[in-house]
Length: 125
Image 1 (cartoon, rainbow, N blue to C red):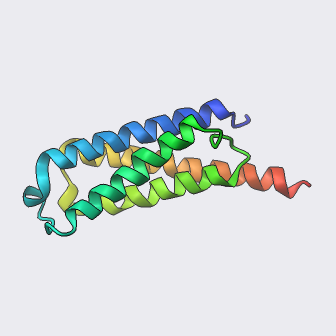
Image 2 (image 1 turned 60 degrees about the vertical axis):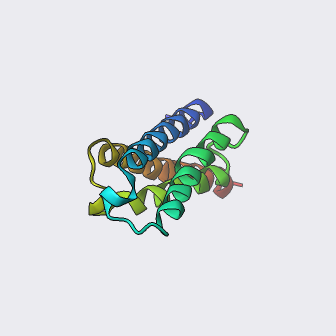
Image 3 (image 1 turned 90 degrees about the vertical axis):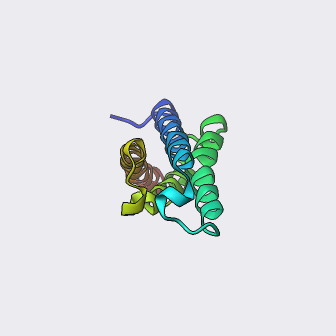
């Protein structure tokens, strides 16, 4: 089975939706209820918004969503690292944990599949 651009676009779209849901869930609870320092809260929300919402949408809308490009693996890796920040126990609120795990699994699969595809395409030349 080959990895088509439509699969990559679908995965990026689902990662962006999960990231948006995670962002809304955490913002609805607020920094005080989650036990996060007020100075760190904006940084965490920017990391979440950029890594799991903005970059996948840019990759989804642009010509980046190609499994033969290394940039696709980088976008998935940034989403993976951005989601991994929110695996801490203090962020264990109902929809946030589920959305975080779904985003992590999709990003991990995207990184592995993209890197394998890039290696196969560029390794044979």
